Length: 393
View 1: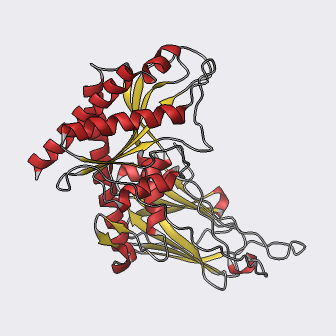
View 2: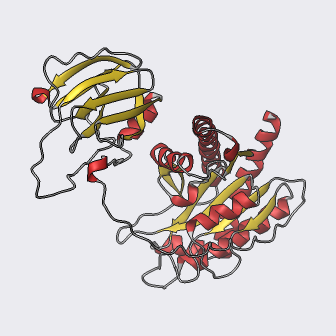
View 3: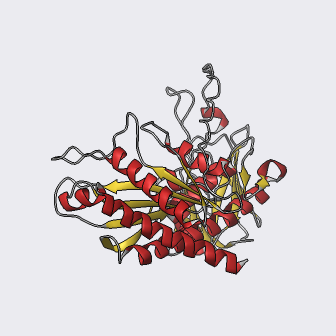
């Protein structure tokens, strides 16, 4: 399997001028870098992460036959392919290219390597392109755009329950201008159903007395996706549950399911957080502004792994408690790249409570009995979840 991890696409600054490929003069490798030097400004280069065998291939245009390259660090061997137009670095252990680019002259390309496990290597190989430009191909103009004032964070909702208890935030999906899925016959709207279910879950949890509860919305209003889990993080919640209804255009699909964040989506969000210039985020109680880039990446990675494990554990627990009470899909627990699940330090699930497009499911979801059954399944799972955590501590 050969998967493109990133591409370096470099174009000439003067289109009318003929482009001549620069020749590689030397390649230096150490534990964390590959440095490729050219005899002239390079105008065309590409790099590809390969799996089976595990390699980094760099298309350089012209690597002469007599070029001597000593392997080192994670690189076990180096060889030429395609008549010298490609350098292939055989890896003895999985690493990814976490950063890279040309120097100001365009004659030196540096790739920064970071060790990862096998899962992260495969995930990074499909994470999408990372582009770099040589000095000679950078645009010779500037674009200035006025930056609007920062948007105020939405007010925090009311928290109900005993202050000594852990906090669960229930997110009623959609709302306001976003109706969500709509039943084609009854015109039942997902945003109305999810709010009713969220309120039923809040009541059930508060009656149980084991947790505090807040709703991201308690009325028909619109929230962007980052605001939803952002509210839970600002409240320092211990668990985030987003309520939704499934829908299909045709067929008799039925039953509830639950989603947690996929590994690939986690990689992308970790990269986004680690690349932030101001690093003002607090991850698991640690202000990343006080940490270097490497430490920040490690903290984010470790925290996300624990968060994803906790989310998956709760998802399986909810499936166990829900099956005797409500219709569920056979493959109840699924993984996906859903924005609302991307809080890096907050266990989160998206609970698809049933199919609003299915007449039987829709009637169940919009009934008192249905909502009470859904709420009871959530309460049982939540109480076991926090009891286990208490015992673990």
